[in-house]
Image 1 (tube, rainbow, N blue to C red):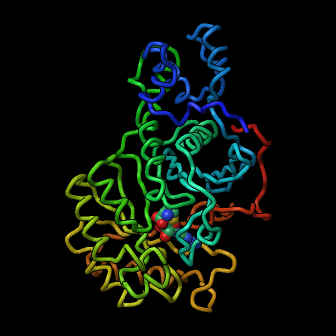
Image 2 (cartoon, rainbow, N blue to C red; image 1 turned 90 degrees about the vertical axis):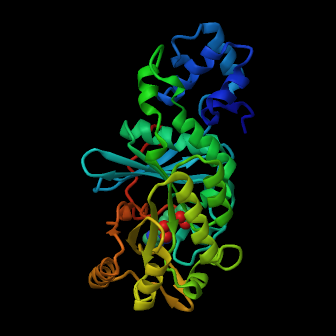
Image 3 (tube, rainbow, N blue to C red; image 1 turned 180 degrees about the vertical axis):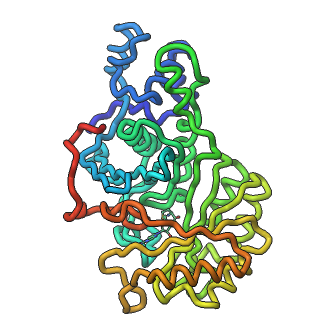
Length: 370
Ligand code: SAH
């Protein structure tokens, strides 16, 4: 393993510190190069050769590498990325319409939450990702699709259980380095994300939501509610059982909304015959009252071997999806049904995780993104 520090994960202030005694403008130049896609110090043409050599001796630009890439006919792209310790994670770029490209980033290798319907949940947690490992996913995706319009932290893992690295990664992604100016400047300035285009999705970790409410960053929030029937939710999502009951979750969301005044997305994965009952609709309606929310209904994407209380889970039929969505609308809940993207490359919601699907075409060459 390489013990050089990867610079891609450092927010500008930390980068200035790492590069000191070099003056701050040098750190801004390096920051812009990295955000603009540079993969080596050699490319940083506005630094002296001596400085480039010196940086190369102490630091890495990026620490991770793309080992496989999968493309699906709907314009989705999944990258398998190898971390410095050999572990592999997955990251996605989804296409929404002609222009919109959404990066779906992972924050942990595996996940400790064990939601019964999710493939990553079955993997158990290996470890938190560092901010470099998070930021580099966006850089690799950008290499491949050239521009990203939105970022969602909806990949592998629970972002709010890796809050430090998440915050630093968001600081890097929104940092931009002041824009304009020398080398890589224009590209890097464009690469800086507004927090309005970043969404953090949580399974409902109350402490983490409160922390975001109080200390920011003011990103958009999505909550994987699944159902607002507490008893059923506890059976589907172990996270709900102990420290995160629905009333506490709702209070946290109210707090978040009071601080950041942004509509919150409630994600409801539709599990055929399980969480589309009248009781679920009534419970959702009661939960949403007093909040500004959009319901995102996500038809369950099959995960091998996923069972709920002894029975295999099944995808909802088109009729069940339509009936559920219509009932939510009738209850006054603004609802969007999310069309499945990337399912053919096992990159749709809840399908991220090792091992590599054998039925997916491998279109990539190792180490050659783009
Ligand atoms: N831990 C975070 C982020 C990862 S899950 C969270 O829970 O929000 C991202 C979304 O995928 C969640 O809304 C979850 O409900 C959904 N999901 C998980 N497994 C799924 C599956 N098999 N099919 C469809 N959606 C799924």
